[in-house]
Length: 496
Ligand code: AMP
Ligand code: ZN
Image (cartoon, rainbow, N blue to C red):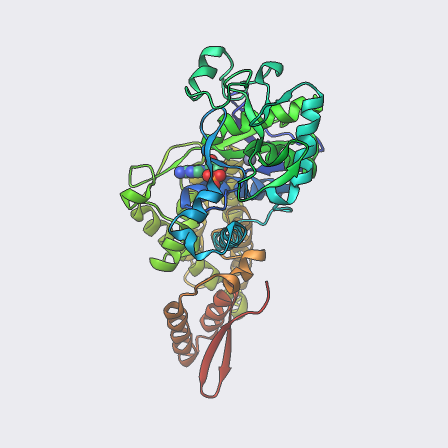
C-alpha cells in the first residue's frame, strides 16, 4: 500500500482533510445516483465522474473500495430545494409528459431510463459500483426506519404523512450551515403544506397518497417514502452505520444530505459519514443547462448525434477539478478528443514496439515513472485533474518523441499507459465498460467502416502492428472483426 496521503476537501469541516478509512486500506463510499425520470445530462455525469475518480485514486493507492451508487426511482419531488420538498413526484410527472407517452406505466419508464443511465455510465468508462441499489427495491427497510424514528421520538405522524422533527435533532444544519432559525426559515416554503407540522422545516419521511402511481402499504396506510430516507437506508444497509465518504453534487448539501445525516444519526447515535465531498455544477457555454436554451446535453446527444468520442467527452468533463466552476464548451470537447487521440497513438506505438521487439535501451522508463507519480500526487491533492491530465499528456510527448520504440521503451510506454488508464480512464475502455458497446443503443457504423478501411490499407502496406492495433481498439469497444476471403465484417460481441 502506498504511503501517500489522499486529501479531499470536506464539506462538513470546510477544510482539505486526509481521507482516512476506518479500516486501513478499505474505503466505504456512497455516492448519490440519478433520479431516473429522464436521460442523465453531462452535468450529472460531472458529479458521477468525481466519484469514479475517488475510486480510481483509492485503488491506485492499493486500497479496496466498497463503492455503492444508488438509483432513485421514487419519492424525488419536483420542488426539491426546499427544506421539506413539495410538488409532484418526478417519475409520475415524467410519465404524464410528452416523452412519457411511449411508456405503458411508470415502472417501464423507470426501467428504460435506468438502463440508459447504466449504458451511458459505461460509455464514459466509469467504474462499476459494487452495488447499484434502487429505492423501490428497499421499501421494507425504509418503512422500518421510519417506524424506528417514530419510536425514538424523532418523527411523528400527521394526516398527510410522517415527518422528521428537526427540533428533536440538535445537529440539524451542521453540514449546510442552516442551523439557526433565520437560515432555516429561509430554506422553507412560505406556504405551509401541512398545518399539523411542528416546524415548517420538518421534512417528509413518508407521504400518504392513495392515488400515487407508485405506492406501498405501510403502518400509515398507502403511500410512498420521502426522497432522503432511501439513501440513509441503502448507505447504512450496504456499508455500515458510519461511512468513510459520501458524495454528490453541490445542490445535495441541503436539504438531501442534511436530512440523510439527521435520519441516520437519529437512528444510530453515530456519525453517518466521516467525510463529505460535493461537485460544483457544470455550466454549458457560460449558462445553466436548460432545454429552452438549447445547451442541454445528454451523453447520447453528444456521442450518438454529434459523434463525439466518449473518451474525449470523459476527458473534457474531468479537465477542470471537481471543486472549481466549469464552463463546458464544444471547444473543450474538441481539445480533449485530440488529447485522447494522442494516448491512442501512443498505445498503437507501444504495441507496435512490443511486437517488433527492437533492441535498445529503455530511454523513457524513468521519466514516465516520475510523470505517473506526479499525476497520482495531483489526484491525491483533492483530485487535481487538470494537473494529473497535464502530467499524463507530458508522458505522451515523451513516448512520441522516439521515432521508433525499442522493445524496452515499448514495455515502459505500455506500463505507463496502463497505469494512467487505471487512474484516469482516458486511454481505452476497461472492465465492464469494454463490453458496454454491445449494449449501447447505437454504434457509429460509419466510423467502424472507416477503421476497417484503415486496417485494410495498413495490411496492404504490411504494417501489421497498426492493423492489429486497429482491431484491438475496436475490440475494446465491443466490436469484433471477422476476416474472410470476401472482406471484413463486424459485429458486436455477445454478452452483457
Ligand atoms: P438528480 O438526477 O437530479 O438526482 O441528480 C444526480 C446528481 O447530479 C446529483 O448528485 C446532482 O447534484 C448532480 N447534478 C445535477 N445537475 C448538475 C450539474 N449541472 N453539474 C454537476 N452535477 C449536477
Ligand atoms: Zn442520495
